[in-house]
Amino acid sequence: MNKQILTYSAARKFQVCHKAYHNRYLENLVPLEQDDALFLGSIIHECLEVWYKKKATGAEINRLIDEAYSLRDSAERQKRDWHLARAMMKGYCSHYDQEQFEVIETELDFRVPIINPRTGRPSQSFELMGKVDGLVRLGGEYFILEHKTAALITGDYIEKLPMDFQVNLYAIALGRERQIPIAGVIYNVIQKSKIRQRQGETEDQFELRRQDLIRKSKTGKTSAKRQIPESDETFQKRLESVYEAPGMYARETLYLSKADMDRTEQELWEITQEILSSRRRKHWSQNTDSCFRYYAPCMYFPLCRAHDNPNIKENLYTKRPPHSELSVSESRIF
Ligand code: SF4
Image 1: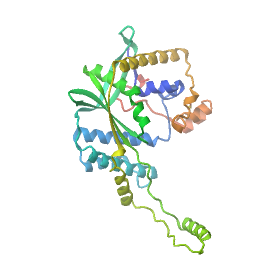
Image 2 (image 1 turned 120 degrees about the horizontal axis):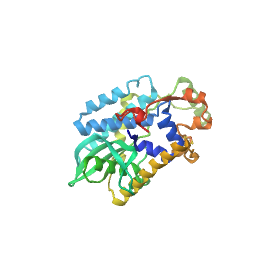
Image 3 (image 1 turned 90 degrees about the horizontal axis):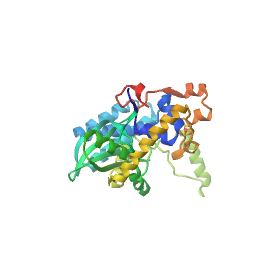
Image 4 (image 1 turned 180 degrees about the vertical axis):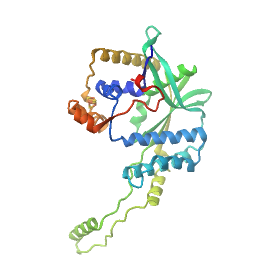
């Protein structure tokens, strides 16, 4: 019997909200509007792959970014992320021109059994599948290389990393697939700058501001000039200077303990059992505490709020096979 595929993302979504898991992995629903933050993250991952795999030049990396944001001249959001991706990668390649570790492989696929920790026997229903950003050797030991783009690199962010379910899971999976001991993980974090290209003022906006300044001025005059839009070249240089600061990058090497691995293996097994139970009962509970995690609504909020109204489903969502980046038969992925 073919086993169902479980990925980290699917397991995580189920942990967060069973209903969200059902919408994404059984109904295959995604919002019609793509999450641009996720797209930027995936472009940076692609760039890092070619940087580490082929030691691509700056021009090659820029070409890749240019192709990804081919609509940047007409789409404002594309233009913004295009600038950001170029500056991030230029800064990164200069900051990490020399590495301490040896890159063994990048973008490693794995497909391994999920083991029942109590009996030591593989699940009859699920297999674990995924992709690891990189495998490197440092001081004679193997480490997973995990790239992340973050809105802000804070102490809290670094502090929480050892609890990261994903890397523990990937360490177990890769160790099982390659039959090698994974000592730990190297987190490679790049911060996303929040600075924006100055848009300048229209004649009307300038006139309003000028009148306001005159009203507030004791002399009844102002020397204010109309703000001119910032050119692409000037903005790119300003962004590049942001990425010259070492604080925009963070590297954290963590050793994974057997206790972490055992806990993760147990957790994974429990998730598979709970998914099977939900499917048997045809019940996918809603975790309403998660509807606004990270101060943004869940992608299924409009649908849940409308009690799964078919019109909302049709107008705001489309169907996309889950995990299309992983090359398996879509119908078998859960
Ligand atoms: S909106 Fe809330 S209840 Fe609905 S799927 Fe998202 S997290 Fe779950």
